[in-house]
Image 1 (cartoon, rainbow, N blue to C red):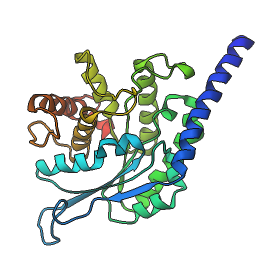
Image 2: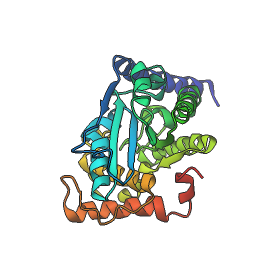
Image 3: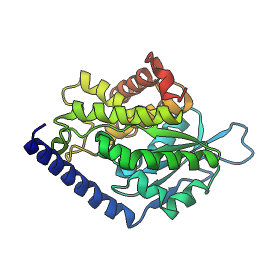
Image 4: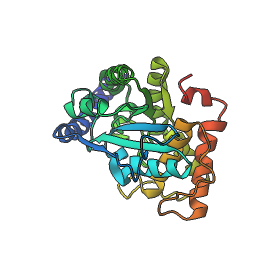
Length: 280
């Protein structure tokens, strides 16, 4: 490798660190805790016979945009599941921010969670240096806290940016998605934790639709369709059931929602490697 190449790569990493540092500074200002507890909309009365599933989502705007936890809860209820969903999120938050956040710590002890979902900042998993320095240490600490609280950890394997991250050598969506996949699979395998393979489901949709409409105009955040696909994946991963045929479809058409339900079911339950999603 030439000296010029080394300088160029170093400059890319410095710019990448600056972008992530700015996002982290914004996230550090306040992590918002939102708990969806109500007898009317959630698990009902304590005398109800069916068990209630409590799911806490820890992450950032990929989780809070379109209120993914609420969409998940609505989908789950349409499948006959009693669900309460909460979230601890802040725009741009890294898992490292959640490790040091008193709000996130309070969220973990605010209910007897069954599943705690961990979502890393969108760029960090795509670069090996950032994974090793930031994502993996934070993920290990959070997984330990989740298990100490009596819950099961689940990693939210996110989608890549529509145009990749060229500043750090990730020239397009596919290159960035492959790197993100590797990062989540590695830490989930190490920790024997479950995965919600949302990024895999996005790839499946992209393979069949020229204009899938999953990203907002910023090429990063999800549209309502993108969020709905994500919650279908969570439904299959958490309940180990197909979401196909569920009546809740948000603001999507029946045809569109059905396609996404089927993609999620195939991704999580029909893949020969499905056992890895379930932490086995």
